[in-house]
Length: 189
Image 1 (cartoon, one colour):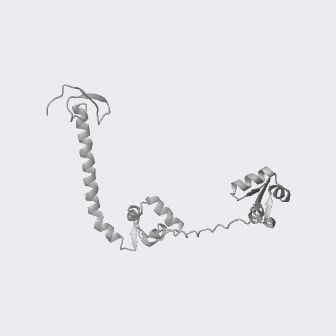
Image 2 (cartoon, helix red, strand yellow):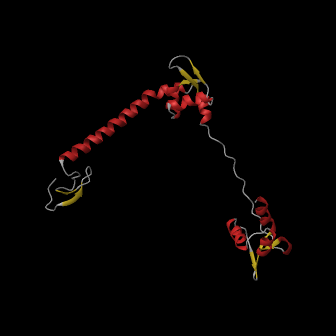
Image 3 (spheres, rainbow, N blue to C red):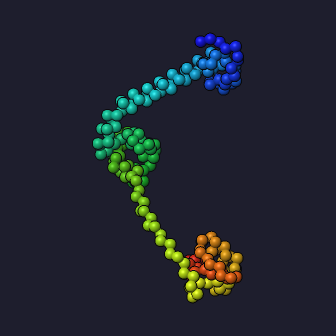
């Protein structure tokens, strides 16, 4: 690859300092930055390989542990992502069943731990059917009627209507509000 007569402005991928590259392929400002990047790349590859071999090594052991009724505290920490202190705290509180077979031989019941992390079923909310408000003559209050009946300031009543999103109907200079919705609010207070 030949050199360019132009100086190509670049930013080093390792140290993020600007430099002038001599070729189009140059990624680093110096040999030391190139070596550092190469070491990091090798380190990441090595960690990935170690992680994969560790996973392969323990794959059979994990399958075996999932079939046993009682597991050790260390196995519980790995399987459920808990600390040893948390497992011991749960045993002490009686949340999970634990058996001490001797020094460092505490076993916990796997089904108890699984029950701790089982999915909680949330009941589906039924769709609320919104009834159209009844604005007939006998079924509505005006703002002044509400304030006199419940001893509330008209501004407070208006804010309460807005906050609870109660439908209103304006006829002339009067604002009508359904009685049943207002009664529900003021009966609760």
